[in-house]
Length: 104
Length: 173
Image (tube, rainbow over all chains, first blue to last red; front, top):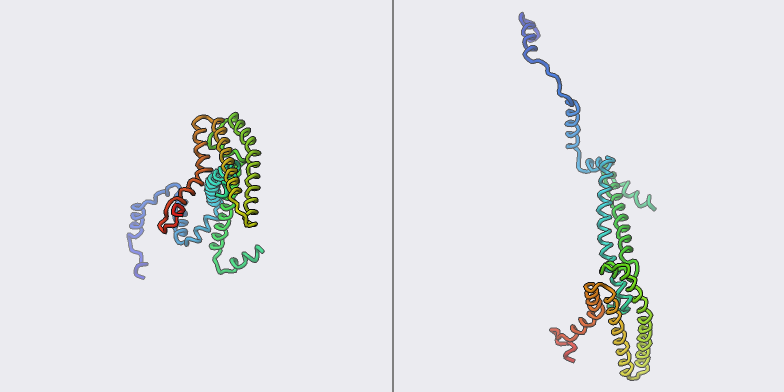
């Protein structure tokens, strides 16, 4: 309680302290940066499954993942298909001129 | 059917996030499978369009060369079929002779002669086709065809002539 008692000169001291710690202006984007840090903190506390689900539900990321899967699958299919097709084409030609070939 | 299949998965005590991930992974896997199979079939079909598509691609034949090769191929096929018919007929005669308990030596010799004639005719065709190609490609075609058609028999005969560790090779008979 003794702390609440005002003493002579306190107001003067207060003015002096306020002038000694001037309030500077916040830098631009300060609030966004704060929110980003809060979001990052929330994400860090999420488990792997939750984070994966978040990615799946983000249209931009889901589309990118789909595009990568389609490209890789199409590439692998094309390479495999070309190899098999080449072998089939060779067998087809040789069998057409030598019917005993496929019995080899 | 689909509901019955998916219900056990939905009934599992999974979080909403886990279900989302599972659904996403399943969908991506399905898309990947469909795209893979589609691309594979498409490329296979492109490579083996007809009997001569391998020749055209492998030996990089021009339109004119391909036309000539096609003529030769179409001219050869009826001769090949005729020879196959004769061989099948002779084969039946041999089987019939064996069934009747007769000695089929003469028929076996005729059968072997027919097979040799068939191979000789095939080699003549390969030579004709190789001449319709640029010299380097023709040479490569000829050696490749000889390896693919006669090579197998040669390998087989060579392996039969070798004496295996058990000592039961044909050379011992």
